[in-house]
Length: 113
Image (cartoon, rainbow, N blue to C red; front, side):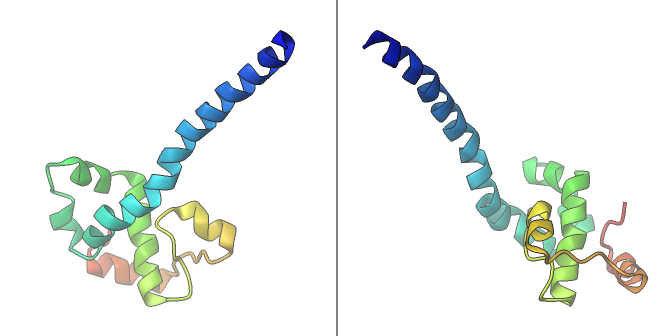
């Protein structure tokens, strides 16, 4: 009986580790949707000047790219659904901006860097 218990012990360890790692990945999309998404609908100059954690998050390169990605979703509603960029690549719904889209984003104050 002892050898079987030794074999199950590593499996139990890895299942707990997998669970702990899965929790943030399951919580991230709804948290982005709840807290970051509304800020994407306000002027970037104003929302990025926040002094809290969301302001810091909005100034990251990833979220600036998500803001552009989200802007394209409003212009082309059948593309760019996800606030997690990889999701649209996996689903085949990713759309890169055209030159005219980039010009419109620049005029709207969307960060392009």
